Image 1 (cartoon, rainbow, N blue to C red):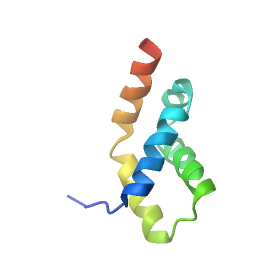
Image 2: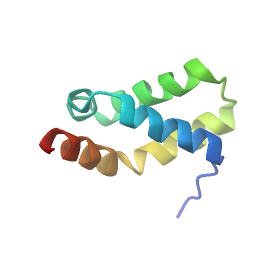
Image 3: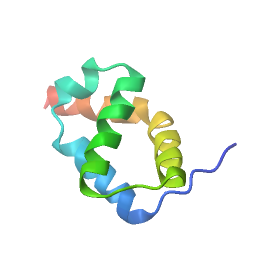
Image 4: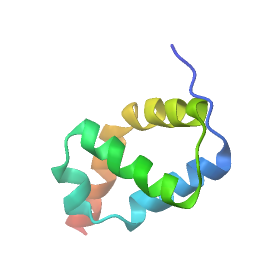
Length: 77
């Protein structure tokens, strides 16, 4: 299994972006577009180097189901 090395500050930013993004947006995007959206939001606050971008991309791709589950739960409540 490939290890994703993303620092905790960037992870907190990512999950804050997930929480702030409309559920319908998170559910309506394809996986590549979801990654692009989330990365873009993170990069608007902090410039990521190549390794950080690659690791964060891998991290998001392994958590797309969780992201969509959280979005679906928000819609249901």
